[in-house]
Image 1 (cartoon, rainbow, N blue to C red):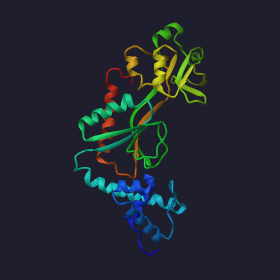
Image 2 (cartoon, rainbow, N blue to C red):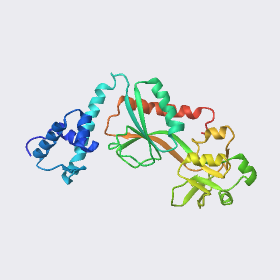
Image 3 (cartoon, rainbow, N blue to C red):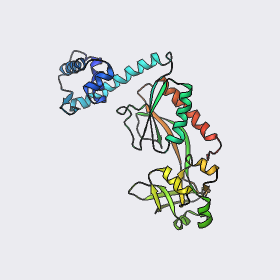
Image 4 (cartoon, helix red, strand yellow):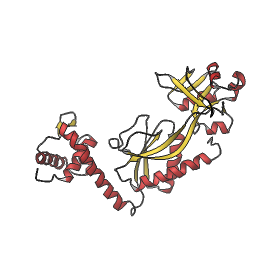
Length: 306
């Protein structure tokens, strides 16, 4: 192949698959659908292969298109980076910030951070997707994703916000009636509350520094939502395993009390992730810095359990 393919057409090909249709890609890019279709057709002619299979209901990349797509995405990312690098430092901070967060973090951490950030930068609007699944940050157009635990993806940059532990807590009334356990084995004689999916064993691993206990436990109440676990604990239903960052207020005002504080779960990280190859926009850079400083500030306030 002697002629160099049109780089703009390559970027448009990536946009079509990113947005799922010619019409949506044309709307996002700001060109007529006919122009977009013609550019893709010319690219296919230049390459001598078909890149997209079109049906009445959907479009999909061909095998050749699937192989070609990552290279075209790099062009899109490079164009976005060039645009961002020229504009970010000179334009007033504004635009839409798209965030993803696991359940339970939005109300106690993310919303307070967004509130103080948008007070400082009122031209910024924020959209948040609360989900426990790992998103494709390119396909789902996520600028920044909060995730618990280190992730294996090499294409993402990790920035730790905080490190914390899960802890055991219970209502004082429950402990007064049922007694305070001294050893993890004593937990088998208590009603236990914790995070649980529909199937699978619940394992709590606790250590006191010199001894480690790991046991599969039968929960009296298992919920895949820590807000529900905490409500059950506060109402006196049993001993609960809860992230310390979620129950600091309840511990501070005495609605919950620590259980076996000498026995601890392993530490976990809460971090922010973004793509390595995509130059973060000014608003993303600013919000990331705000998260690092703001999270620490939130957890220094009265009621923090960290």
